[in-house]
Length: 292
Image (cartoon, rainbow, N blue to C red; front, side, top):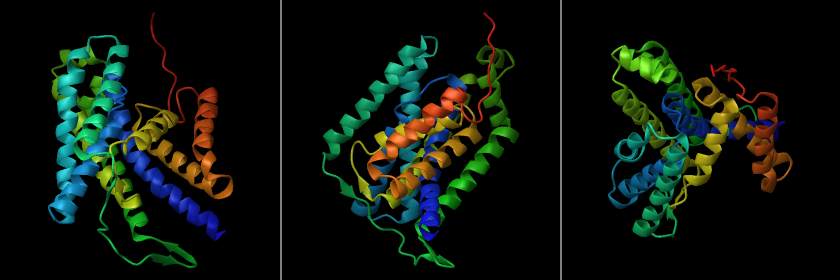
């Protein structure tokens, strides 16, 4: 049983990071119906910013975290304004191809600037593990789960109760009607990218604490898995992104422990296929009817 509970906790640890990243996907898709494949590479930008400010410049941990968030937000807003905004009236396939192109651009730019050699992420917390009966839980695991949970609850409350959150929901329901009601759609979309990139910056820091190595393609696999988590839970739905992230993390961890570490990704993708066959809109998604 100790092995099971340890793997369950590890799954919640990884799943909470996936959930944080998935929130960026699901918020952007819910507003502008864009699958932002460059979101994973925004995490890579935050990771490089953190490792440079920590290891090279010698900044404190809070300052490095803040700089990572700022870098992610700046890159995210620039990408939205320069690459996505001109294509809002274009077919969705154009935005999708552009998102893939931006992702490739960021990865190759990082490869050109920093090289292919991974950079170690310094240890910033050396706390003793927490003991619960016979279980030992690392402090990083507890910190990641708690921080992610707080951020998710805060974001859900922000979207449901704040004026900006109501504007986001209005834009997601009907872009043109929201404009007629006096909502500044451009500012609302930019705010959505700012929030998503802020979560990506925090997620990059937490991810590097768990996997202390930074390289140009760092964000590709977590970004892909977070996108799958968003689809699994119901893309465009904030609680769905959270649920999908936790399901992904737990399934991946239990597969590595009881089946095979080489089959963990295959099992996760298999779960996604089964869920979408039974419920195409995702676990928390709802069927939408469209007038033709």
